[in-house]
Image 1 (tube, helix red, strand yellow):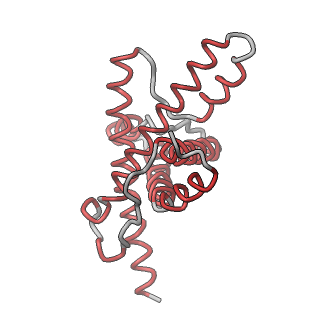
Image 2 (tube, helix red, strand yellow; image 1 turned 90 degrees about the horizontal axis):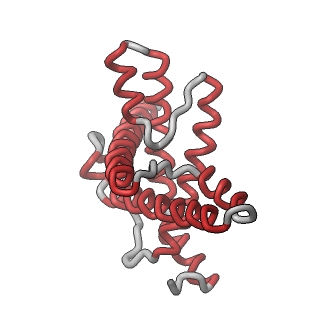
Length: 192
């Protein structure tokens, strides 16, 4: 029992580290995109919803929001696949990690599907954490850092829980890349 409890604790620490790495990388890339395009890169599935709702009133803006959401999901998927592929190098407890099963040649459609799944799951987690009065997202690594500096232990605790959940989501979804690629191949939408 102690071995499994220890392994679960080590896995939890690994997910925390991977979640923080994801949040940092997404924050950096999001900052660069915001500087280049003057648009915040949220990766939030709400952007897709707003884009779909706006299509009827303002097709250009609606289509632009949908394209921007798809672009952000590509970034999310790219970071997730990178972290999943290198997770044994990035985590402190290597013995509890399995090798990632990431296929070669992941297509744009597969990456958008993977990023969309991660985006949706992060949206759900953010809504769940709103119970604690915190509004975190994939771009809020600075909120966690500021909470540490300010001694705001509630925000820090919720932020660390968020990071563990993000790490778990990223690794879980990225490890299913082969399955998603097979599904998109069978559906015939992987030709792009």
